[in-house]
Amino acid sequence: MLLLPAGLYAAGCGKTVVDATDAVAAAPANHKVVLENDTVRVLEARVPLHSKELPHTHPWPSVFFEDQSGPHEQPWTKVNIRWSQGGPSKGFDDSDRDRHNLLVELKDTDCRPAAAAELPATDAMKIHDPNMTVVLENPYVRVLSVRVPPGEKEPWHTHTWPAVVVYFRLPPSQRLTPNAAPVPRAELTAMQVTFDPNSQPLHSVENLGKVYYQAYRVEIKPVTREAVAR
Image (tube, rainbow, N blue to C red; front, side):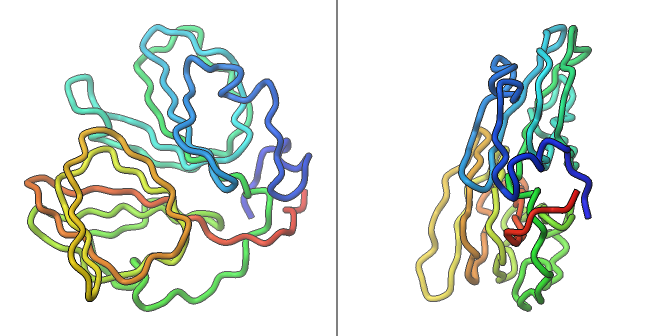
């Protein structure tokens, strides 16, 4: 079982109440809510070089995307993805570099995970496509990196769990489903974060561009309504 910040237990399973120390309230110049619902909150966090970030708290654990691109590279060309336990942060008096992060905060990590179930043979990881890889997994999330080479298609597959889907940029593409016309998608030149609340039936994506199609799916595993024991 994951160790969680003590403050998550105060309100019981899935009912954490944020206070004035929350990152958005305490350090609003550095934190912006990109997406929020009953399951997740996605924050974009920026601390420019030599700037100050006030002390604050991250009330929920998160999947933490860190932009590690160099000063002469496009943003998010290099991405480090890790699990963050959340909790207090002392901030920065004088940041030693430009910091740009994306935090996918999970609101139900004080609830006990549901028992693991057998995934269908069509699940994205069951089809064993080398362009679909797990970059992080624990009892609450599975994070997939999905890459499609230029001019190629994904194998047909499904997605089992709801997910936050992160695109930092995309070439033009089209979504394919059995017995339906392709759905075109225009080139995406800026970060886009969406929430997919349902499982996804059989589908594929075709890359119509000249660079790799890259997406990240933060898949949210089911939980019970039983609070995690201290």
